[in-house]
Amino acid sequence: MIMPAKNTICLWYDRDVEGAARFYAETFPDSSVGEVFRSPGDFPSGKKGDVLTVNFTVMGIPCIGLNGGPAFTHNEAFSFQVATADQAETDRYWNAIVGNGGQESACGWCKDKWGLSWQITPIALTQAVTDPDPAAAKRAFDAMMEMKKIDIATIEAARRG
View 1 (tube, rainbow, N blue to C red):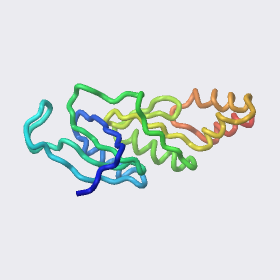
View 2 (cartoon, rainbow, N blue to C red):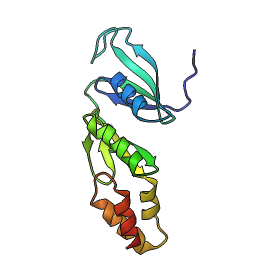
View 3 (cartoon, rainbow, N blue to C red):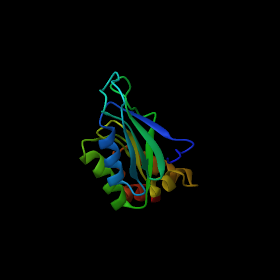
View 4 (cartoon, rainbow, N blue to C red):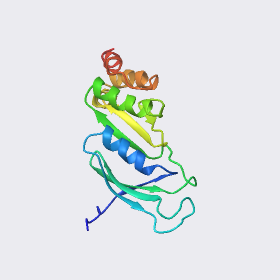
């Protein structure tokens, strides 16, 4: 038996936790799908033999997904923040999430088709909005506030003034 991680993020899905886990594993590096557990009996949102939980890893973070039914839904109070190295990586993750039934939000946030929030955050954005020059940081921040997907060239131009 594999010993579980001491601390694991548990994510509640209405259904299709296995599909979500497989999408994350295909999309992000250092991600994988582990054990898939089926319910030994009927439960409020499913039947005996249905997928109940899936152990998976998202970019090195251990997770367990639960097919818990519609009682609870994801919201922006929890998100995965993905630090990207360049515009190509930013575009790749953003387009994978949004293009697979997800939706755009503001300031680098988007949701996947299961309702889980993601922040696709270029390292250049973090550096720009924490610039030691308060005016440069504010210009970059103001530019970000107008964006959905982050455009690094626009952020850097704003930072420079």
